[in-house]
Image (cartoon, rainbow, N blue to C red; front, top):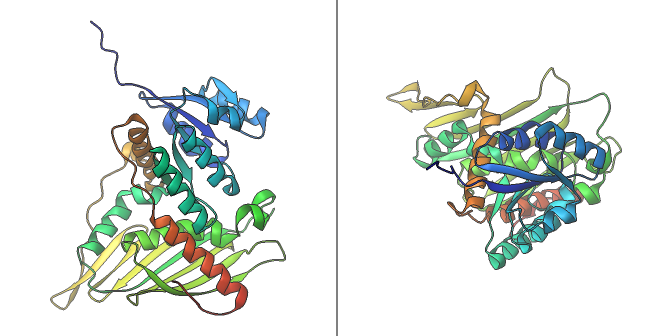
Length: 340
């Protein structure tokens, strides 16, 4: 008797932008345990072209995809201002969701989604792929094990190259984007820094933002301090003048320091500085850590949809969006803001 093989979970994708086309759809469409049942996009012509490219059988409207009974899980790659409403509708329709960052544009929005997920018994997975990268996980483990001693500061820079034709559309409209570089780049950058530190409680924040006359900021500078006195600083910008984007994280401790990326960890041992960087597994097919992080993220989501894993409620996103909200308040009012 022939074996039927693993059950194929049925997944829909809302939004066919860059992240969908370069990461979610290529990875999902090659899996034997996944059937990408349908996609949706506001641009129906674009949606049809993407569906043909990845062999997706149906192009639906957003509402049709959310209501489709056969779809068990939905990847939401729509514009940021739609994340909360689409995710809530999917959960209420009995579907698990993977939501690209930000989970919502406010701490209240993040809290709302957690409440809906709890009420419906469905899982929410956040699209923070760096958490699934082997190098990031190795750094988090080293910090948790005390390899760096007492942590003094984490400094993250997330700088994207300036482009000749500035970004247009919803990203430039504050009511739809929630903000500029701080919301777009600061969310993943601060999540990276806070996640490797174990998501400490934040105590206060001061921030400044700069723009070019548009509705949202082009760059942001944030200095936050945890309740235990650890400084967390961020510089995020859409206007780096350099050959390539530059994303870096430094963590400094009393007995060692670390950097991403590439990952390097140094520790003071016997009066000497010693390289204690753990050996990293080589990602599948030689792909980079970024793409491999998405592959592992989608592994997790498929397990949640298939019922073999439970999604951990992303409660830390309430704290993250509280910090982002307070940073905008600080920049607007020109003062330090304390977090309750």
